[in-house]
Amino acid sequence: MGKITGFLEIERHDRKYEPVADRLKNFKEFVIPLSEKDTRDQAARCMNCGIPYCHGTGSTAPGTPGCPVNNQIPDFNDLVYQGNWEEASRNLHSTNNFPEFTGRICPAPCEASCTLNIDDNPVTIKTIECAIVDRAWDNGWVKPEIAAVKTGKKVAVIGSGPAGMAAAQQLARAGHEVHVYEKFAKAGGLLRYGIPDFKMEKGVIDRRVAQMEAEGVTFHYGKAVGGSTPGAIDPQELAKQYDAVALTGGAEAPRDLPIPGRELSGIHFAMDFLPQQNRRVSGEPLNGAADILAGGKHVVVIGGGDTGSDCIGTSFRQGAKSVTQLEIMPAPPEHENKGVTWPNWPLKMRTSSSQAEGAVREFAVLTTKFEGVDGKVTKLHCVKVDDKFKPLPGTEFTLDAELVLLAMGFVHPVHEGLLKTLGVELDQRGNVRASLQDYQTSRAKIFSAGDMRRGQSLVVWAIREGRQCARSIDTFLMGKTDLPG
Image (cartoon, rainbow, N blue to C red; front, side, top):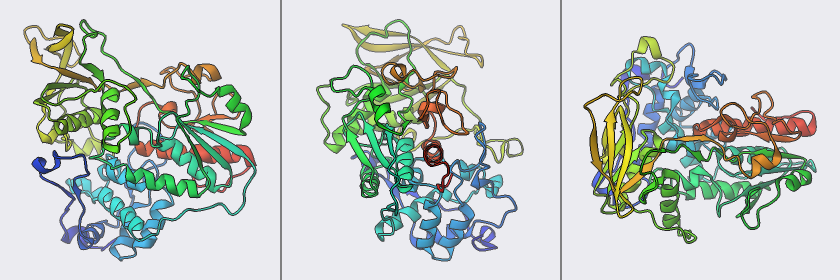
């Protein structure tokens, strides 16, 4: 694929970032795209390898190499190299409803499994993917795909994150009448309210929603399903009104840190902090919630993952005095052992763009107590831990902190309200039990996909599950399906 000798002649060259001092002035995207020539050159590096692990194996096992949505990466690389951008867009959209999302925020397991990654020089697959879809939008190639025949069947999708959006779009294209119920004011789920604008501006979501509406999807905003919120919809009534229901509400129950001093003010979950800033950027009201702001404060982020990084970048843009990130896991190695790890996703030291903006990172640290004055947090008491997370005597230390952000992940979906009312079975981790064969829950005609079913995961996995769930629902309703997996 690409140029047969391209990988020998052309060095890896990826997108650059705007300087830190410039990008911290606003919440806009700061990735600088490659030129058309550079993108085509990078696509030319895709070698004619025997087994392109970048495709993905189709397996759902943890650590499976390659792309979860099985993008046909060598094919679209070759099309870009040949200058056939429109066909590259068609190819890319055949497996991925929203490549502009993954082209911005996916960690790119495809690149980790690229054959050229054996030599630490994988093809810049994510950059090429983003270039294809952005060019497609710019040239008007992304159009509504309206079903030629309507089936007369009605499907409700609860939750409009990437899994819900993917399921809804696929079902509408199969000819079903699709209604998406979203408790917030706009669609997108974590894409809208969790991912900061500097990683993905929200107009990227809005144009997809407009496409879906043109395809016949109806979005119902401010409509909580289940729970005690005023105006909440009864899930049992909803289930009666529709021929099938897809539960795609995400995993929203955050992991807490129940240690002494947790009740002090100034300690917040990441998902109380991040959505506020996204709403400020978009001009959406906070509905009376007290401001959580990092300006002029010593900020400590507890949790070393992507959500923690998003807290770091947001804090710096708000004018934080300092940001320290604590991770309980030991520092990973600087480089992986290729002979052991490739083509699987390797454990190695990675520095996000937000961490590179000036955060202090501490590994193998356990927070034991919060300390405060007048009810407000002022310090953290910490200790270093061994590889079994046992405290090491004599390594205790304190950190100044006027804002603490808990970014330790999510344990499972919220059980109160929707799930308890429907009475669907949960698995041992507290997620909705539904098999990968048909995505059906324990209740007839109710399906589940995305983080609500698999637990917290990547956007690309949510898109995959949404597509496959739609295929199962279409089969359930019609006895067969023409939707791709």
